[in-house]
Every structure is written in C-alpha cells, then in structure tokens.
Amino acid sequence: MLQIHHLKKSYGAKEVLLDISFEVRPGEIVALLGKNGAGKSTTMNCVAGIINPTSGDITYERQSLLPESTLRSEFGILITAVFFDYLNVEDNLTCLLRAHGWRDKAAIAQRIDQIMALVDLSAQKRKLVKTFSFGMKQRLGLAQALMSDAEFLMLDEPLVGLDPLGKDMVKQALVRAAREENRAVLFSSHDLPDVADICDRIVMIKDGLVAFDGPYSDDREIELVTEHPLASGAAYPTLVATETGGVLHDTGDLNELIGAGAFTGNRITDVRVHENSLLRLFQS
Image (cartoon, rainbow, N blue to C red):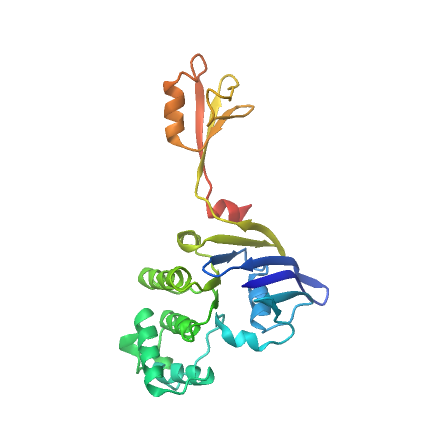
C-alpha cells in the first residue's frame, strides 16, 4: 500500500536520511524504531508532506505522493495532534469530518459516538479540549486519526504519556484497525514491550539507514559452554556446535540432549540464555 523508495533528506551539509526504503502492506502493523535522531520523525514527516525529501520517492497504491498529492487526504495521521482548544471534543471532530466531506448530521453524530467509545472519551464528549490532560489529548489525537476510516494510519509515538489502561486501549484500537478492518498501520514508539505486543514487522532506522526490516521473533538462544567441543549432527539435529560448546533454541531440547547422553564425559561449565529481545535489537 505504502512504499518508500531510497528516501534521502539533508539540511545543508547535515544528512539526516541517507537511504530509507521499506513498505507497509494492508492488514499489517509496522513499528518504526530507532534512537533519538535516527531519522524516524523525519521519515514520517516526509510521508505526511510536512517536509520534502532531498531525493527518493514515496508511493501510495503505486502513485507518487511527491511533491504534493491529494491522496494524503485519505490518511489517518497522528504526528502532532492539533485541536481548537476553545471548542469541545464533539465540535472538534465535527469540524474534521466536515473537512473530509461529511454532510449528514446523523451520520456525523453516529461516527463521533463510535470513535469516542473506542478511545474511551464518551464521557468527555462535550468538554473543552483546553481542559484535557496530555494523555487525554493523545487519545483525542488517535480519535482524529481513526475518524475518517482511512486505509493507512501513521502515528508518531501514540503511546507516550498514557497510563497502562490508555496504552492498552490504543494497542487494541491499532490491532482492530489492522486485523479486522485490513488497514495498514505504521507507528513509531520507544515503548519496546508494547511494540512487541502488537507489531507484525519492525523497521529499525540507525544513522539514517534501515538497519533491520523483518518480523520480530522472541525466540531465545541457549548457549552451552562445555569442557570439550560438541558434535552436532543427525543424532542431535537441534544442536548447533560452536568452538566453546553449542547453541539451542528451546529448553526442551536441552532436556532431550541430556537424556540422550549428549554430554556423557563432557561436563557443562556454563549455560547462558540470550533473549532475542527488542532491546538487543535496539542496542545493536
């Protein structure tokens, strides 16, 4: 649905994006990760049309978005949520729907009620936005992104400032959008456990380049250190021999190997468990 092709962005001599390429497909939740300054927000701002890249292209359903495109009106975007603080929630969302061409008052009211229930703001529908906390404004920003049934959702740090219940609500909303409504979702976050909960794929940006693009796996790696080298083979297919011992991916395999006598006369001196965690990927 969305494809980013060799995107580059420079500010004078400072190169922020060196070469960014990835795609987001319908029904998929993609997490955009990276340390501060890696280029996540710059990439999203290019997709949103807030800034123009130096070179490269961004296409949506095979049509270029650069330099300007009305196709962006079909997106649901939460980067920096903007509201009319002097209006209440209902009036803010009514203005947004009218800007998207909605005219039927009953349909507008029904849609607002649906989204307010989804982001747990029904009781605050007629409160002025200027009275909202940061977390409540984050929920309202999510409501704006979801409001128009956009097929592509892009959210920059949608979980920041939310309490555990608020985070769970946002995660459920994103999963529902992807799984049940077949929308494409791209979001950035520093909340790594929450990313692992819901994402289908991770795109890791490091120093302006895509350092990793693929599914996240939480498989563990069990490293065995033994007195003598181990021999992997047909008898022990789950064991990968190393110079210091061997590697397994399941504690059950270790029990089977011990039962099969794989370590007879060869003492295990150390067992190290390496989590294939997002933190390790983030730090790599």
